[in-house]
Amino acid sequence: MLKANGEQRGLTASGPDPSRPRTRSDTRPAQVIGRATCRNLKGVPRPPIPYSQPYRAPHESEYLEQVLSSGWTHGDGPFTKRASALLAGLTGCESVLLTGSGTHALELASWLLEIGPGDEVIVPSFTFSTTAASIVMTGATPVFVDIDPATGSLDIGAAEAALTERTKAVYVVHYGGVAPDMDLLTAMAARAEIQIVEDNAHGLGARWGGRPCGAFGVLAAQSFHATKNIQCGEGGGLLINKASLRERAEILREKGTDRSRFLRGEIDKYSWIDRGSSYLPSELTVAVLTAQLEDFDTIQRQRHTIWSTYAQSLETWAKQSGATLMSPPPKVEHPAHVFYLLTPDAESRTAMLEHLRAAGVGATFHYIPLHSSVAGQRFGRTPNPCPATDDFASRIVRLPLWPGMTDSQVDRVISSVHDFEPAAP
Ligand SMILES: Cc1ncc(COP(=O)(O)O)c(C=O)c1O
Image (tube, protein in one colour):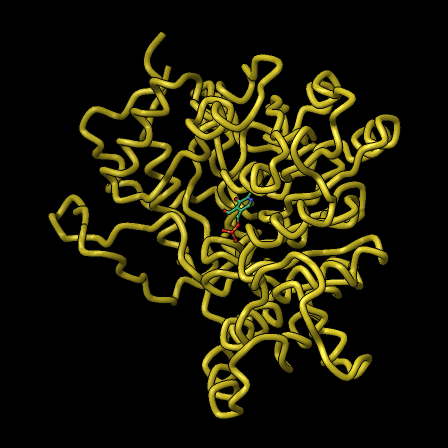
C-alpha cells in the first residue's frame, strides 16, 4: 500500500535526483498554465505542471501565413499533399488520407469495411469512446474484450475467445503506442477470416518487430489531437494498406463525390456517387500539421529523454512501493506517448493522484472501461468479464510528458512521486 508522505515536505525540499542522467539543458522557462499555483517551502508560488502541453513547431506561423495569403484555405491543397507525403514517409504507408480527426479516420475505416447491422467487431474495452462509436455508427456491434496488462493493449486470447460467425473485424488499439504480439493477431485474424484495423492514435513512430504500427491492418487511424505527439489541435489521418480501398475512401471523405479524381484531372466533372461526409481538414489545420511533422525527430527525442528519465529515476521507488512502471515488451519500439505506472491498488491510486495534484503535478488516470460505460452497455456486447481492464484502469497513473518540459519540471514530478512513500508493513 502506498501513502503520501505526511507533511509532503520532501516534495518541495527534494532537489534533482543526482543519480538521474541530465541530458537536456534547463534553460527553457517554465510555462504558467491556468491560475492555480502550489508553493515551495519558502511559500513562493510555483506554477502547476500540466499533464500535456501542445508543442509549437518552428514554422507553424510562417506556414499559416502562407495559407492565409494564398487564398486556398479549404482542403486538399499544397499543404495537404506535403503533410500526406511526410506521414507516408514516417509510417511507410504510401496511401494516406488526412482527416479532421482520428475519430473521422476510424469512421472512414468502418464505412470502408462495409460492416453493418448484424455484424460484430472486436475491440478492447480499455480505449477511447470513438474506437467503438465508429463501429456503432454503422449499425454493427462492438464486442468488448480484455487487455493484456503487460501492454495495456488487446489480449489476443480474449479476442479469439470472442469470435463468432458474425465477427467481421478486430480493432486493435496500440495503447501508448505499445502493440500486442502482431504476429499472433495477424495469424488469428487470417484463421478467422476477419480484417484488422489499427487504432494507432497513440502510435505514430511506434514499431512492433521492427515494422511500423499502422502497417499491419488493412486500415489504420492516426490522431493529431492537441494531446498527441504530433498535433494540430484537431486532426487525423487514415492509412490505407489495401490499394483497392483507396478510391472509395476518397469518395467517402469528399462528401460522397468523386471530386478527388476531378482535382487530379481524371474526369471532367464530379458528382454524388456514394455515401459520404466531409472528412477532410482545412489547409489552415494542415499547415500546422506540416510544421509538426517536419519536426518529428526533435519532438520524439525530447519525449524519449523524459520517458527514459522517469523510467530510470523511478525504478527503485517502484520496487519499494509495490508499483509497476510501464515496461514495453522487447519487440516493441514505443513512441514515448505516455509514461504510466500502476499503483498496487485502486485506493493508493486515488491517494497518489491527490498527492500529486496537491504538489501541482498534473498526473492523471485514463479511460473508463467501455464495457461498463453507459453507451458501451447500450450498444455493445461483453461476452466475457474483463478483469485486467478493470484492474488496469483502476490503478493507472500517467505522469506529465510533453516536449519542452524543463529539467526542473521533470525533477519536480520525480521528487513528488518519490515523496509518495510506501506504508510501513
Ligand atoms: C485510442 C484513441 N483512439 C481514437 C481517438 C480519437 O482521436 P481524435 O481525438 O483525433 O478524434 C483517441 C483520442 O484521444 C484515442 O486515444
